[in-house]
Image (cartoon, rainbow, N blue to C red):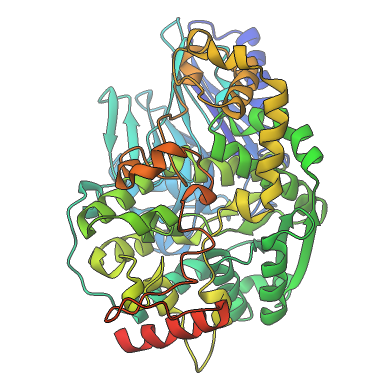
Length: 585
């Protein structure tokens, strides 16, 4: 990941202003410690802090077209840049950077080229021929981008809020899948998939099509000129990423530089569920596995720094960001600069435990659509900023644009959780990789119950956070929270504690408005809380809050005909699910 900062229309374009831009850009240096760049043109500034992943030798930014009339600063990766270069043979490229195609595509096609990009990106482009500019963010919001306005009429863009919060009167999170055009004077959506309209799809489920799409998504993300690995929690999603990467690594160009043995990384408290499961998967796949431990106190000590970097006070995000933040520091110390991660699967396939309560396929599908639309505020924000805090880039194959299209076109009836048919959460994904001839994973891993990352690193992590915040926040403080924090009022002592830290770093109203709010259980939207009346009594975002589901959901499997309970052990459970799954498709 890199850090970008761009400012247009500054009244003051003196050396003092240039120094101020450099100072603000330096706040993003953790994202890109390898090089700094700045281009000034009149009252316009484009700054860049580079994390060199592709073409480390010559790909410094900002990037240009042939005559340097078009300047672009980019944070991200364009996985299809070689194919795009083939369509631009009349253009002369200066570097091997995957992002340079953006300048030439704009020169060739104007503003209508963003949908051609296959990757994760936020970029700002200046056309000095008419002093116009555009800014765009990838389809899902994997890379962060903020947009702000100064009192002098200037407009600002930055990878993180901290680079613009002091100098902008108002700022917002730039919406994913959108483009801002100075010519048209506003935002417009460039990404318009069918699922965004939340219409119910009808395509039948084909496990081979789904499997092939995911394998392609993983393979294209092995594009790198630096050491890399996979974040492996031992859950389904990260295990599938690691399994597919292992299967195809030897055939990739990356193997020529870094070898064919995949590195995997896991973090947790001593004895946590994730550590045990990840070690088992790593042994099965034959990876070079790195296991990192942290204590509850170490996590608590890091909270202020975590909230500063992730720029949120959302409880779930802070809980999960902290171990990821600590792990990223260890990963960077090993010389690794890029990792693959499993975010996005639960949103696409309804993997959170509360989806057990979805009343019908229509509400199931609409909830998955809402979850994907909000990813940039939660898991994408966490995965990107927790790793970027230490100059590590996280890539997320499940959020591949083509894979999402295929997965979200499937009739949601196939995604519904049906214990009577042996369908647990994310059954269609599990079934797609359930290959007895060339197994991707052991059966019990393939059918392991969902653990949220903040739970899987060790249940005492969340309990420890609650104990700590209960001591630090008094009953009186929480009672008066609505007066101190009238917007997004914290309802628990833990939420109050995180909010107070956030406000210390980001005191403006615009900052607190970038963080979502509302009731949630086990990561649900506010709408899904209505699916079960009992959930309103236990409004905690932990997966354990899905009462009657977590840790017991599949220990008892009803026999549809007589209502008896047939499963009496996890081993028999996996066998029973696999047998039923084989009979369904």
